[in-house]
Length: 84
Image (cartoon, rainbow, N blue to C red):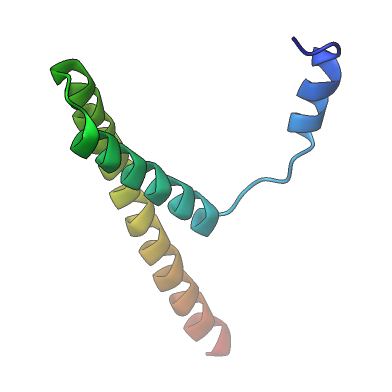
């Protein structure tokens, strides 16, 4: 047990916010881990949990890719507008 949980919570609050690329990499790692669990699981319950995790994370990953694409397209439009 942490002897000073308040200090630990404060340290977490001081973390810098991540960025879209870091979140994509983390989510991709989670997808690969869930895939490994699905491949290695022998119990149907564990397989279903891995399938559920894959379906949820896949949807979120697709959204992140779409957001990244939209951000770059908006940036390109703003650059064109700024130079006009």
